[in-house]
Length: 233
Image (cartoon, rainbow, N blue to C red):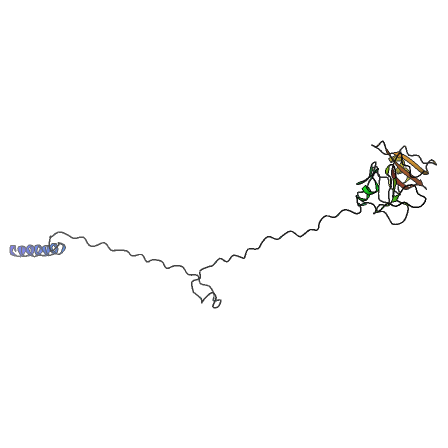
């Protein structure tokens, strides 16, 4: 029995020695660690854009497309429309005309005929047979009828007669009623009471007056004139 135990012990010792030799370095006899495994991460391929085939211009399906930014051609700014040079006004607007105490718009009492024509509101003055003062017309006045303007040789433009549509600052015009006239100008009196020609001092002026004629209860004539006019009555 002792011989058998010794044989078993020798066999185990030899086996352990073999294992130790296998784990030892041949040159140094020391243990060598197993090498660390290397992990390789594959490099991702660049993404591709798959689009349906649009012919030879975009390429076949699956071909990588590089987008291109195309800017529209620059468009020069539009120039403002050409405008014609301003021209002189030849007639006032009926909605804004007012016969004031000193005249009508740019046309002023006391102007010479040449100065009046320079306003582009009047025609050429003329002296008719039997008249003492040259007369003229407002360009916007209806054709025919009595003269619109009277030029005194000594005073200049002495009177301006309104056409339908022109009003006084108080709103009186040809066609206004007698009641409207009396409400606007309480001092007006006609030569025949409520009829005929009457005069009203122009508010704000010491040299001019309104000449207003009434017939059948309505204003039929309206003018602004110098107090000292010497062309008629």
